Length: 273
Image 1 (tube, rainbow, N blue to C red):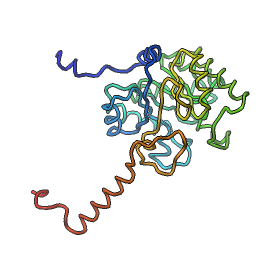
Image 2: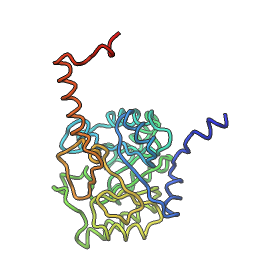
Image 3: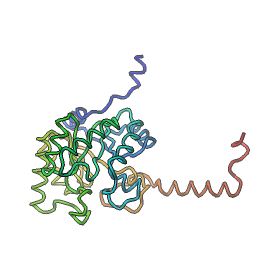
Image 4: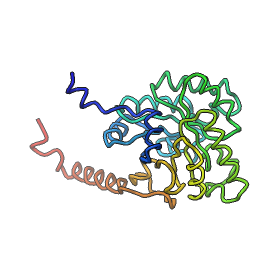
């Protein structure tokens, strides 16, 4: 019994993340959408796994994140949770599941938590969605915020360029961040905003900030798994560091397999019964 306990990794919680930030320890966060990848990512020691609505792009091939449904997000999230022992699993609430209707927002969040056994949910937006955030928090569901470039609002912005380069928008993001913290969000993702603005927000908040394209001053970083592994190859923003060229390796391996099959090199005598 004691040996098993020693080998079981301690589960990351929202409280863990807060303590990490207080101690100045950076938070690592990555996306995952299926059991196998989630199991690998979790065993690597990642702190937070985001079941992102970016599944719409990298798993389903949509141009934006808008088409993915609540049922599809629940399917991906449940698959991820089954592969995770340590990391905190946060799930994106998809477009149309919370905007403008706080009762629907709560219903959507409850479905995610009950049907996936995830640890938290994430919503895009600031003061305009506070009613939904407050209602979800009132049910005891941890909420991660998301400010800056919010991909679900792409039709409003019309571009994926850097946000908050002008003072008025920068001031709004600062105000939104403070409002989300005051409401009770446990962390906030800051996407594609100037590094110094992210630094200001991180210094003024007590909850963790997680950056993506927001510079080095945030309390943690997040990337899309398929981007950083080089599986997706047509997306190369400045903030993306590719740690592998896995797309090329997969293509090469499949080509070799196909060739071996056609030349009757696979299976060989040692690979049959």
